[in-house]
Image (tube, rainbow, N blue to C red; front, side, top):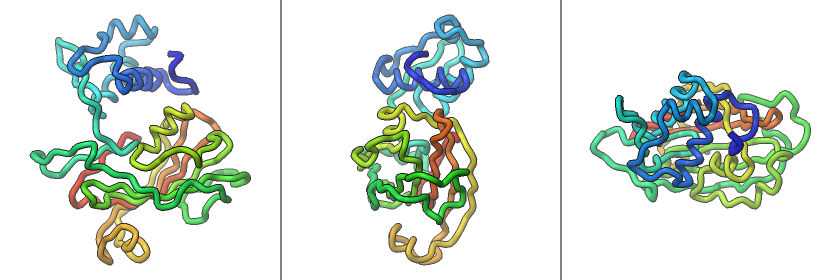
Length: 239
């Protein structure tokens, strides 16, 4: 599995490798992935490991599994980095061009910010800090503040982030892959300045998610403070 480096569980190695192949168009939409047995032999993995990787791909919409037929490649899912989005109403459709990303504060070097719930064990050194909005059909879905060590992502401030997946940039430019982490979630009522930033009324219910996101780099952890409006759309993530 040379396409993916770093210390990842075997199932996630396979998931990342197949995911990269699907994104690059190695397999055509409607075609079949190699069978579980073929994947076992190619990557020298056990059947449960292969099935876990395929289940992750199916959960995120990259493939659809049919008993007796195999894994059929689907159109690339519409997502928000680690989060995917779907309307509440099953008959409503969503297109990739409906989703927009606005960078409110471009990546800047600074000491670790104080307003995050999770903090790194060592705050020495510089951190990149940025703020962004995600919109769907001009409606703000979430506002996010992020901080992460600068040492392992050189020249990150030069990367184009508008209308792009941040975690896609981490993955494709720096080979930084999310392994998991810890999160705390609670409901709150929006107050200023959040109401102004998100364009919502005071006391609007919002979901707050604080995350400490571990990656395949032992010394590279991403810290996220996110506020989400879920009145119109559902957010779904694997973490």
